[in-house]
Image 1 (tube, rainbow, N blue to C red):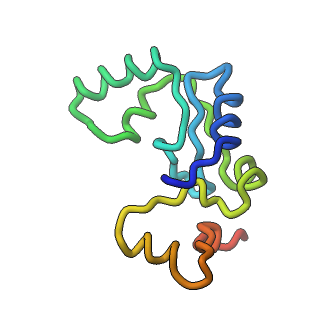
Image 2 (tube, rainbow, N blue to C red; image 1 turned 135 degrees about the horizontal axis):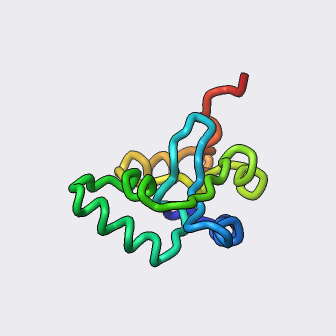
Length: 117
């Protein structure tokens, strides 16, 4: 995620103050577990649990951390980052071409969201 914005990270830290972490969650329930903040002690304990259970997925780790504050992407983060490109990943050469191509402006991840009913 090369477009992480400091103000989003600061917001997540502020929202996690009375919790064991703050994890962005999309309207459809998808989580952004890599773009989140976690309490070290709670995460260490959860890591031991998922390793012992041999369920080695990041989502499983989130499930084992008590008291997570789920931050609504569309309502809470979009006002701070209207394009929502803070969540954009670059995984392939095609992703990089898409960002560098055309107008020199990368497309908004928001353009890919389903319309709100």
